[in-house]
Length: 236
Image (cartoon, rainbow, N blue to C red):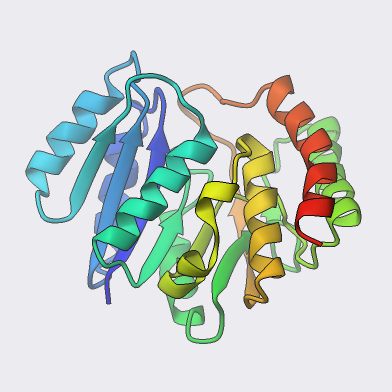
């Protein structure tokens, strides 16, 4: 079985080598990594090419000319993974907020589900202990808000650590999904639920990055707040 991990990067030079090394130590048969770099000025793209040369049959790189956004990076990665015959497609961050150690459990659970969601908001899940009360409230409240507006039945609608069956992605109209950031994660979840796919949540501990800079911005939050109203009508 082939599993392709789709990993968008922008200025992740401090994390990329280590996250790839940890993925490689999992010893999962058929595991490949696709790095999609948006012309990072810190040399992330060059590091990705060096890793691809070292693991020529397991690491692949797509370079994009500018910072084009998380959503379009994942859509590009999904198409690539399907074209190379992936049975399972994983999306995850490169900054260790999504621990590679969860992947074996994700893949074991795929016998029962179409989509696995690494969830911070189910029993045994959690967020970084150093988060401020305000940040905890913002994350938790954003999930509650999005669930109320869209009718999503999962608990972690903005989480970006997910695994898809091949057929699940084929069933989605990927070109219809135009959101970015948190809104992208919400919209994909809406599309999956609308298709009647089996969505399963597995508890994860979300640890904040220790190196590099966060990509979070007020625009990402605002986009998610107003786009959920569009999703309410598009995915009824």
